Image 1 (cartoon, one colour):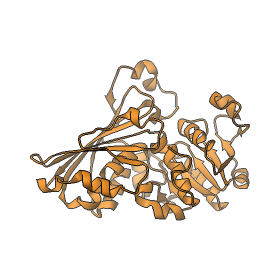
Image 2 (cartoon, helix red, strand yellow):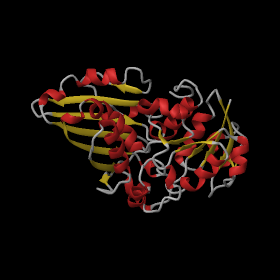
Image 3 (cartoon, helix red, strand yellow):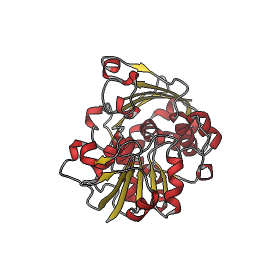
Image 4 (cartoon, one colour):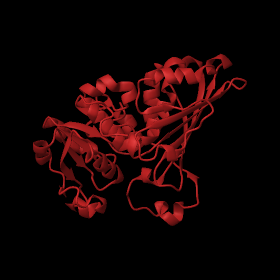
Length: 339
């Protein structure tokens, strides 16, 4: 059995990881903590009454190390970098769901997250936890930087193009929409039901912290500098990410045969579903699952491809992908405990 702990159990990603791990056949969940919440899990999340006797307490690295082989950090950005070194020092493997180890540069981190990185020597050394691209490295890793929710959908939607047709790409525009749970469980007037219901708004134009993450890994896949225009939107639903991505090519030949290219690229990947030509993803079809659905359409007369992608931001965009990474790290089939 894999002995597992979750730090940050009181948030939505922690809750989703808990829900998945309690049903995982190879996991013994031994440790949960949160810095702002204490008590029995059944009191924090009444959905789990009668399912677990675990008690949530403040984080203790020694106790976590005694009880766990791997710890999921479902904590806010800028918190993980304080906890991760303590766990790694105690030979505990870490899957970080925050953004603290996704970027390679301390200066870029400070620019986008507004804080100096206190563990900058590990930047660029953590393995980026996108299994469809970095499977072999994930299996060997001690520290996983779990991708952000927006980047997960965008990178899976764009990986075949930037990997195989990168020199033909002129521009990439990502129009992305997220359910409100993507903002976390923090109390905010802007996220109240009466504020978001029956509304739609863009936010953080040219300032969203997922922008450098997407550009960094797209550039790595393309082996050249890739820049994107990224506009996130908040929509009045609880979960779900939907991205409409416009890729303009230098010439029309580059836009031919894209469905076949995507199907070949993802033919062995269990959680990417390339939809039939003319079929578009829908959030309701991926809700509660670890799937990413991708639709491909192109207009040769305009040298333009429109790639659409949908994921559950709390599953494939966070906790489900983290469990997929854990499975690979411990030699299990990556689908174990997931659907």
